[in-house]
Amino acid sequence: MAGNTLLEVKNLTIRYETEDGVVQALNDVDIKIGVGETLGIVGETGAGKTTLAKGIMRLIPSPPGKITSGEVLYMGKDLLSLSMKEMQEIRGQHISMIFQDPMTSLNPVLTVGEQIMEVIEQHNNLKPQEAQKQAEDMLERVGIPAERFGEYPHQFSGGMKQRVVIAIALACNPRLLIADEPTTALDVTIQAQVLDMIHKLKAENHTSMILITHDLGVVAQNCDCVAIVYAGEIVEYGNLREVYKNTSHPYTEGLFGSIPSLTSDVRRLQAIEGMMPDPAKMPEGCKFYERCKYAFKECKQSIPPMTAIGGTHQVRCFRYTDHDKSGKGGK
Ligand SMILES: Nc1ncnc2c1ncn2[C@@H]1O[C@H](COP(=O)(O)OP(=O)(O)OP(=O)(O)O)[C@@H](O)[C@H]1O
Ligand SMILES: [Mg+2]
Image (cartoon, rainbow, N blue to C red; front, side, top):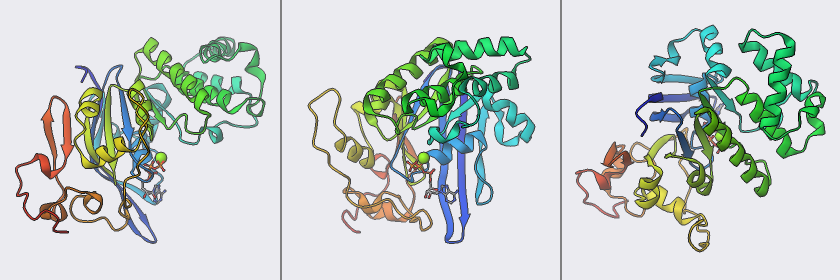
């Protein structure tokens, strides 16, 4: 973990109050990101990844969403206590986000150049000519010729549009970029290109990043640390080596069993049996209990605490605590 912490999320808990009940989308989440560092957030659909990202940005739709507790410390300041105006300054200038459905985040009636310029003008006091020059530079940096400044989104391919979205997100040189599955909608070959590009731009500017993905291969290639999220909780956390070499949570074990490894022979895909619990009816104990082959009685009764198992590596599993491990198979 880098010495200089840029962002620290503490005990963040977020609910959605819907007609069907209260969805516990995020429960007591802690993360920490150093300057220039990339944290990967991995978990299956509905795990709470986007909720975490939007919580940091204060973009949880309310209602139905509600941040019920926690802190989001950016350079030591709690973003949750800022006014909307102060928060707007943070967004874009300090923290920017690439949304999960980036293709819809472009405005069809503005040229791509205008959209990049808009962000630059919003945050800097520049003459239009200077802003245009910067926007053109930004286009070039994401691999789009500056001559295409005056074209509209529909004139670009999916991969190119995604580059534009990235140009917009990086136009103000944010200290932290939150990328929510930035390449999921793209072809595999374009995915790699776009990720390489983000990686390069990030390194040039010492930008920190939160990279949300389903893909453990993407994490391996882009992240320093990784947080595995299951049913709204982080179940395993640590630097890449620790988590990949010493995979400890039964859920992470399952995930690693179900992806083709990039370094060894491609393994057969093996899905984890069972389903994530309904977030409107969360079980009392460990959320992974029903799917866990190691579960014992205690696991059903209380939520295991995050337990340090060496270095930065932490696991939310009673197998690593000194709890009573009797009653195996006692489901
Ligand atoms: N606006 C909302 N209203 C009600 N429930 C919501 C809302 N947004 C998210 N949820 C619920 O919160 C939980 C977490 O959703 P979230 O979108 O954060 O998951 P995710 O990990 O990003 O999933 P995916 O991989 O599919 O993007 C889910 O159960 C989801 O149905
Ligand atoms: Mg999501």
